[in-house]
Amino acid sequence: MSGVAAPDRTPEGPVGPAASVSSRLGGALLAVGGRIRDGGRLVRSRWRRSLQFRVVSVTMILGTVVLGIVGSYLYQQVASGLVEERRATASSEVLQLTKRAQTLLEVTDKVQTTDELYSAAQNVVQEVVGTERSRYAVLVRGEDNKVQDVILPPIQVGEVGVTSLPVELRQKVAETPGVQQTQIISVKLAGEEDPVPAWAIGQQVIVPRAKEYGLYFVYPMTRERETLDIVGRTFFWGGLVLMFLIGGVAYVVTRIVVSPVRRAAEVAERFASGAFDERMFAKGEDDLATLAKSFNEMAASLQQQIGQLESLSRFQQRFVSDVSHELRTPLTTIRMAGDLIHDSRADFDPAVSRSAELLHNEVDRFEALLGDLLEISRFDAGAAVLDLEPTDLRATLAKVTDSCEALAQRKGSPLAVEQPSEPCEAEVDTRRVERILRNLLVNAIEHGEGRPIELRVAANASSVAISVRDHGLGLRPGEAAMVFNRFWRADPARARTTGGTGLGLAISLEDARLHEGWLQAWGSPGQGSCFRLTVPKVAGAALEVSPLPLNPLVTPSADAAGNPGASASRPVRPSTSPKVAVARSGGSRP
Ligand code: ADP
Image 1 (tube, protein in one colour):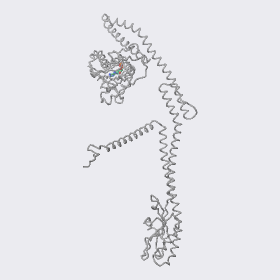
Image 2 (cartoon, helix red, strand yellow; image 1 turned 45 degrees about the horizontal axis):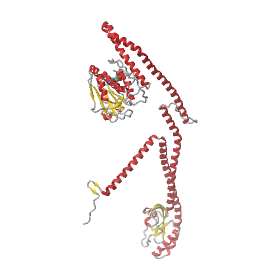
Image 3 (cartoon, helix red, strand yellow; image 1 turned 45 degrees about the vertical axis):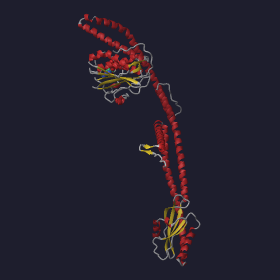
Image 4 (cartoon, protein in one colour; image 1 turned 30 degrees about the vertical axis):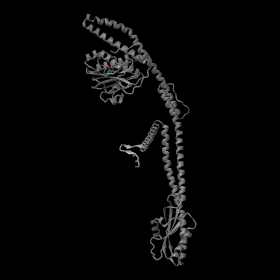
């Protein structure tokens, strides 16, 4: 029994060699598809980013269209000129030849039989065609010929027979005796692959006894077609070369314009990134030189103004720092005196006792403000640096909630903490993170209208986040972006039991920046607020996505990346402020 070859297909699909061929084919197709996609992406990105590429491409595309239109118009003109010229020469030649054939046919009236007449007619046609190889002739009985006793079969000289002659042409010849009729036909010639267009020119002749016959001459336009082929090829290659020349010219011209613009952009970029001494090369009197001169003038003026502002700002920072320092000593004395009076308030009459209490509270506020001012001036002077240590932020949060528990109870806001059971460790400056969290929590208690406050801790692969959510007044549209401004308050008249300074969130923001973290706010009137701190697990690593949502009203996936469009939040990107050690905490937040 002969063996049966295993089939290439199973119900599941092809196996064996067929499977490997189809999988290889599929792989090759995928690779080609990938290359095409990569190419498309590359072209799209070059198109977006390079003015030069756009100009050269558009010039080449428009050049191709214009060359195509002009080329095909010229080609048409040449073609119709050649065809028309061939028709004109052939037509006048045929006029002569027909006249001569008619004369020769008239002398054949002496022949007796139809056969003799046929061979005489053959001779006539042969003679008028002569040895010329570029024309053929056909003599065929006219369409309206009524003579029945003498009928000559068609006579053909050359490769073209009666079947190549269109019926309409033969009818027209029969209907218009003495008038020449022309028509373009297509003939199949030996040695030519494709049918060749040809002029067919016919006129009626009278054959003695056999009456009306059509004498047709066919002029194939082989040479004209060859000429047109050459013209077409010349146009194509000429057009291609011209297109690349146009592209080359566009490239050179745009390079002349774009190169200085690119240099200007580079200079502007360096200038914008702080290199205020950068200037553009300005030589000549053309438009680009004028642009460069204007840019340089603008840069010089900006540099001067920035210098002035910087020295003013330095002066202000110094002033704030000096004043704060200077106030510390008298404040300490006032504090001691105030404490003394406060401690003995029971001995005073009620009005004085109340004043002693007020004095005590205001001295507290004054101390806090002074502390915050000193802290801010340290950030401004770039004198703040992180004291990093791996910290479980759950413990930091626990410490903060413990210290605020009493205040929360006074305000009637229960604190609820939601955190994972495993540690949420990050390299942070614990003291600063604690200060941020305390500030957020105290604010939530202050503005939480006695409603519950939710605190959440979460971590992902690269970051840890803590969010503080209250259900109090919330923030009006646009306020989430302003809460971090120094001394900004939604309602300056609102009484504070803890004596806030208006600098708390500004300091928190600077602390978050030092960690290269994000401090973001969300709020909605009547719906409460949510503040979220996100820090990288490894100090200095870039943050990409926060493990917690900022806007509690949208789904976490839409918001967790800290997308400011998703809510009224303000993502705080790390600043470039230098890190210098802070001798001690200036934070005076509760
Ligand atoms: P302070 O609390 O001392 O006024 P902050 O910088 O801490 O200064 O806060 C600035 C302002 O931001 C507050 O005065 C308040 O208007 C607003 N704010 C802060 N936290 C909240 C919150 N949880 N809910 C509503 N508004 C808030």
